[in-house]
Length: 256
Image (cartoon, rainbow, N blue to C red):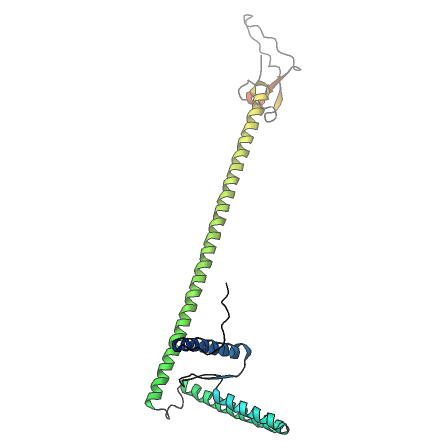
């Protein structure tokens, strides 16, 4: 449920009035700050409490805002002087910017260690503290950058290690598959050799062991003096015998 409407009138209770003033003042200052940041507007806010306490907010500074306000009011009262007043205003803005630039250049030279003779010991101490704080911030930022880079390199190293492990596993699996295929090929070759030998006649492989023809020649005639050893008849020269090649080493040259 939403909050009910509040009647806009003076709060009689002093404590409630002070609390309301504090809350609404903070909200108003917050809105003014947001307006100056979001819209690049020059905002000047002045608040006096019932007790006479001053609260103000300005962006960029209250003096320039008041001067601009006064000049704007003057231009409204004298419309014929608008061009001259605008030129004077921009001249003042240019002079203020030149003065600000000179201050920045002087501060930069002092930070670089130049033109320090005109500074007192207190200002030099403040400058030293400022430099130490700046150096500490730079070192912290550098350490953070180095830490982030180390973490990123470690992450990339872990990814590369995982990829290498995956590649090693794939290589091992491919080698195992090649060994299995080679073993299957050898087993199939041995099975084919066994089947060929088992189906060949007399257990010999006629494809590898060629048969050749052995021609028998007639032995020479021998004369014996006694008739107890008659000459054996010889086989005709035209008779041909087929002998496998494996038996040629053990078969005689002539068969009787």
